[in-house]
Length: 487
Ligand code: ADP
Ligand code: NG1
Image (cartoon, rainbow, N blue to C red; front, side, top):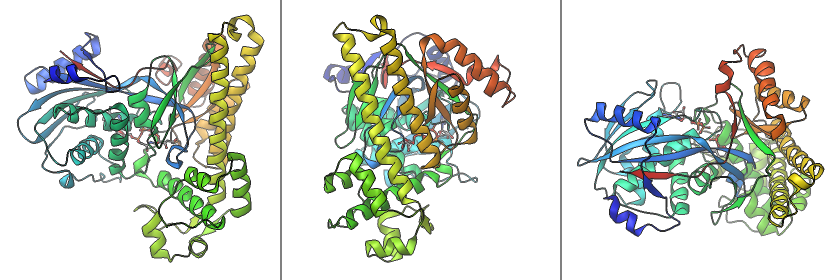
């Protein structure tokens, strides 16, 4: 089966390579064989990601700047001749699950008793999305064994890696190939079956990532441009030890719909006719035709209040409450009666500006490297200045997420504070309310920085022995995107 696909493979499709023989693959292969009585016929590997800057703006249509991690979801798979999925997980906390598959309409994604999705629902999201794309034409079922090492519910995209790995495995099993951007968009759509209205950053970087560089990702159309990060910078991820499952609360969707309402109001009050369709803050800016800085002023003019009540929003948009709920709110936000529109819109436009600034600084320092006027070695002073400017943008991002977007956590704030005392700037990464912080650390301070976090945060604050803390704080290097391994 893979031979045909391999011969037709285009450069913009997910790469297919010979399965490497490493300890992790070999272990997964043994587990697979013990369970299913045969060796897997292919593997799919999808990385997690850390977002360097551009938080909570992908669903508003603005560019983001993530990179893929070494940590991933690895799936061992083989085809079966019945319309069914058999799911196993190398981590015993994730229980086995089997199900018949007929049509995508019949795949139900329901939460467990705590209102949290069962782990296998993320797999079902990927399969549901793929089946919908295939208009229910399915040739093979699958036996899947999953091994993931991305810290879950921590803002490093474990859920998207799982959804994407399932979707990619299923499409490959049906002999379907797609471009990386097509499959990334399909996976973003598929993950929304879990109930959260994500923007697509995670699935985009999962497929479009390249080794050694971050990606500047734009939406509509989806596109990724490599960003070379300054040579002297190391991005360190530190877990706050607070997990936050996005789909278990309505925190995430609340922010999404507050942005939708802010966008609709800005357009309406600017006198531009709306067709009542959902519009993003980015589309609103395009329609109004203003710069990001001008949009910030417009937010202060048209959305001056700290709190907007439902009836006020209805009256500005000339809709009744039922219409407002049906047009703009999600199942888990319909009951909301108050909205913070100014704060959310300010964060979005200001964060979008920070992403542009961050990218420009990186490309300027990258260009000077190419031209042989490399600031890293020739002028240490200018390199320090670059890192400090980039770090400050990350710190401003954190402050904004904490104060305007209200999605930080006291542990994250403490990590940021401890880092700052060493002159290192950091920010929460991913959705927040817990999860991880990412710090921009100059290479020469790396060892000292990680030791300080182990002592001041993990040991003193969380009672975690310095020796065990290495699991929670690590330096990253940008990794490549999804890949399929065959024999
Ligand atoms: P994240 O920010 O990591 O994407 P989410 O809250 O969106 O966090 O999703 C986390 C959920 O994804 C977990 O609660 C679990 O259900 C699922 N998940 C993550 N990693 C794995 C894994 N290795 N195996 C099974 N399920 C996983
Ligand atoms: P995490 O928390 O890493 O899964 C979520 C969204 C992203 C983006 C960020 C905030 C999903 C699948 N992911 O990421 O699209 O909005 O929050 O920037 O919903």
